[in-house]
Image (cartoon, rainbow, N blue to C red; front, side):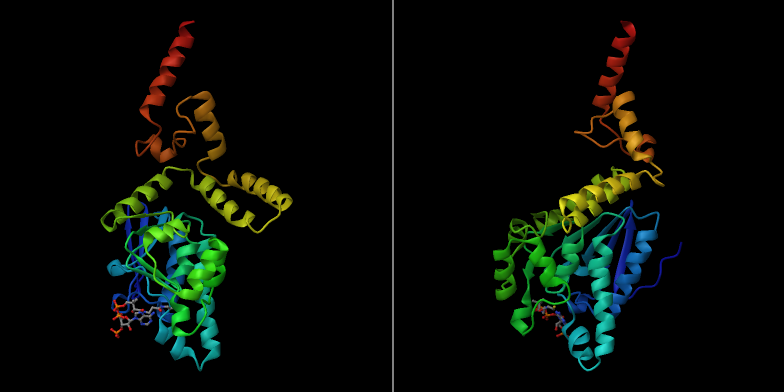
Length: 301
Ligand code: COA
């Protein structure tokens, strides 16, 4: 399938990972209306693309994003409230709504700058890994506005109350280690290791059942808004939903490989996916060998 033409977004597909880069390097990947429109379409395409198993959101040229474009997103739309609203909804749409419940795992690969509006898609992805020297800043207060769009809500929900007030009210830049400490990324690594760490995580995610993973991440997100009764009911329904149209038949396959075949231990590895059985990945051979030896011993009894 030929790739759609994109100007502000660059997608590189490799081994199941769609590396999706905001692509306005001359503006530090600040997000313009044109970029928002392309990101909306790109996420739609990637969610439906069978070749894509994991989506990584990053910025070209070693910069995650300098946030909303202060000229094209703010000043140029000032006197056109209808268009401003249309673009704001598209921005909130891909940066939050789409990513929040995306059907495939998503990872933010963060380096250079992560500013203002970029916190929205940072916090909507399932995982985030940053370079230690990234400069994070809720800079809005420094240029006379509040962290709008979805930023204040997403940030206040993600971190402790004191951290939220401190960073939103001061706007000071902080580094990747601090971002990990307050929990807006999973971890910070030296810049030269960033891509390898993201690749490692993406590959690990690809060894899991896509249906189980999708249901799990969506449940974790949704139950935060529910009381216990609602959550228990929702989780039960989602559990049932995993089995509908799941080509892996994850539940039964997982149980069968553990209880009958004895080929893996869930504590140490996921069950072998169909592709894995063809040799892409699988449970450690140690487990298989042990299972064989056990079966032999039993047969000898
Ligand atoms: N909106 C519009 N343009 C932006 C931008 C933004 N958010 N961030 C950077 N740019 C532009 C700069 O104006 C500059 O354009 P020019 O070459 O036409 O002058 C270009 O990108 C390069 O940025 P520059 O400021 O020269 O790079 P720097 O390395 O010295 O500083 C930043 C980088 C990110 C520290 C600085 O650009 C900055 O503070 N940007 C504002 C970020 C912000 O507050 N975003 C919040 C939006 S919600």
